[in-house]
Image (tube, rainbow, N blue to C red; front, side, top):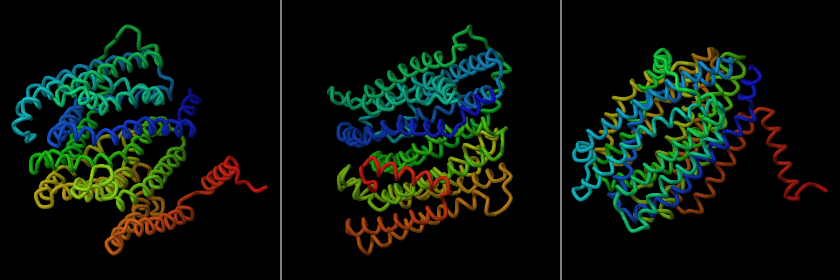
Length: 517
């Protein structure tokens, strides 16, 4: 069984699963890129803003999952590493499914009860959309039991590192969130409830497919259901602090759009949502890695310290090296990209949001690595406590900035919050890993890593004001890229990483026919 754990934690498998996850999350993102302008044109800004808020609402009600999905991943990972009895594991899983179904039904009942109040008093819905919004939100509520139960099934597949099967399910579902509403529009209906109903149908299909695939990878789950109060308590104990995070973290993630809808307008929500969607799609990179790292950290936490230390540091470094070029491009060419995609008027109202959020996403992506480590090491209470500390100051800052500076102020508040969160997470990860010397501390590393791109980011934006032409900005960006590349080669990459890149470069030259004769 030790060899099995080593196999599930191998570098090749982790890299393969990361790429699979990235592909699985990237394909729906590309579909969203194509369909969002069509949805806005077909629905109108107000209806599209409400459509997004409805999806945000159901996303927030996923807090009723209580962290059980991640608890399943952790306990199945540890069982695979230590060779626990399959019968005990099956009992734990069925107990978890029972909890998830009950919690999903409770969430559905609560959302149905609060639907009139949410639509009429909270979401600032125009009168002509109130009836449509209420019907749509009722349809959304029916998907909650399906969504929560699916989280448990995916937890099993994640623990087995079967991300190929997870993405076989998630890619079609992710596409359907954008494609089905577009098909409804093309069929001649811009009624929002029809679009929402199509997404609920997709969730039903996903749940059925998930159970069928999970039964294939873990046949014992097909045995007669067995339930245990002790097992329910076990997953709830681990998920208890995760629940706090599941309440507060989505609240902080989603409140920006709710504040815009309440303080400003639904049209302002649309102006914010589009650059927000673009910037936060970068989180798909770290989300793809975090899904792989969580079971990997769970496997390795009782093994040689050097294993998880190496995995932890390289994850931070690779996320940094991947994101810096993308973030700089988004910052420098924000107006140009949005103008090309959505039109000049939309770009004028939205480009500042994209500039700010692109930097915020880079900081948040780096922070996801210690966040994953802390939870995998059995300390979800720490991340929850940090969220408790951040909540009230963030909400106050969000209200103040939204009132004074509009959607750009909302983006700035988001940046401030994720920056504080990153500092706290890296600080505690250092303590958890018993890092003592300053040069080894990841919080020290975080500041060093962030200083270079932030300085380049501000430099390019400043020079863009003096030389605003597209060609001038492109030249400056290329120069910064060269400088960052040289710095990364000299100070960040280790000898084996340099050797790997040189070998890859040599192989590419040979394939392209540029090798020396």
